[in-house]
Image (tube, rainbow, N blue to C red; front, side):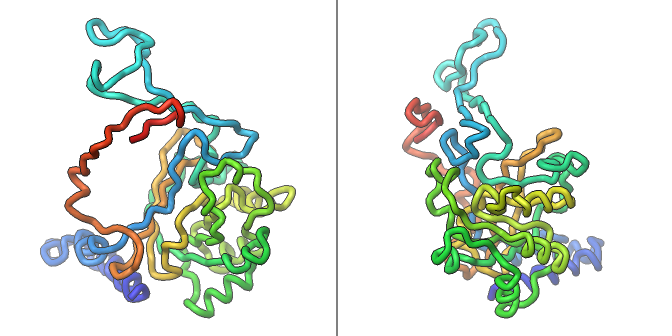
Length: 312
């Protein structure tokens, strides 16, 4: 079913591109709305993104971030005084101030400008990154035997022997289950950790022409110079870091939707990755009536000094 799902969806997208959205075609399928109705509306959606909080794992060189209730930046007569905290009771809304020590936090999309200023920053990443075929290659068994194991070319070839060649332009996520201990801050200093070898990265990009790869840890590899990340960035490639829940995604047949804030000149991106799996996949949620309006909670959101965030 997974193979059929991705093949049929791809065929539909190609048909739209070839036929165009003329009156007859629009009447029959409403362009890409037909793809949505036939394939995406009933699909399973799996969030591959960690929630960002002030205590999540982060490289100690950056330090901790801080969340705070937003305060008024100026007086508004009869409404709020400068420095006053906005509250639901008095002002009708609340907002949050984020003091972020880095754009390398949580689940990320690294633009090449992270290392190489001559290449695009996060706001220069093209809109074509929005949705791609998703490949998941597991190295879980090898990491159990060797916690510092790095994906090798042979692992990729073994995956292809079972599933077929990796599609050009796809996103390849490497599953290691390292993220199972998230959000323990100690993860940021835990060594060894699983990674991706330089040879594997070169094979994926130069032989299979993928869009980018992603991994669960916060670094690509454990070499002294981070050779894999250095090679990627200095050759104009992006990468995903801090990816979650890869154990809930099929190895083949899913898509990945990609979103990130457009910070001007940003050298990193807080990213949201959503896997879109076939309707019969065992994990994920489906589109339903509860999506809008969103359900009301019997536990109102409130500020917690203990966590430094809003909680229920």
